[in-house]
Image (cartoon, rainbow, N blue to C red; front, side, top):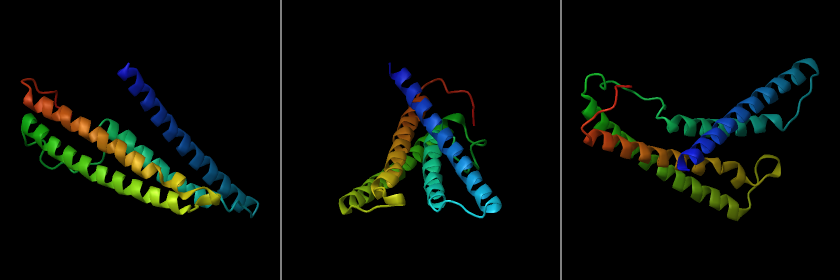
Length: 166
């Protein structure tokens, strides 16, 4: 049942990312056509595109964290033993978890302040609604890297090491 729930969550995440990217392409292309051919445009498209970039980046980061596919600087992993590399991944994963959890917490505080202050953002929408992706995404990334770290530690402590996928 957990496996099915995770598959549905991943499908939702992937679908949301595709929808955001598609919306960005359609809106940006439409705005370009309107400006160049008809010398007009919609004033709300540019701020919406900036908001969509934020949301796309955050959802993209959560998708990348799902399988530990973030950009990384990997200088020594080929020179280290598989077990030592796993221990280093545990440390890096726990550091990532900590940083992302702090950002999620501070982001939640920020969103709460904007909610309590009644601030508005794009087209009069509540600012907190537009910003809520920040604590949610960083919280999910923190959770995923905590799970990765536990898995890497389990692998490092076991007698059988995984295939080298570095």
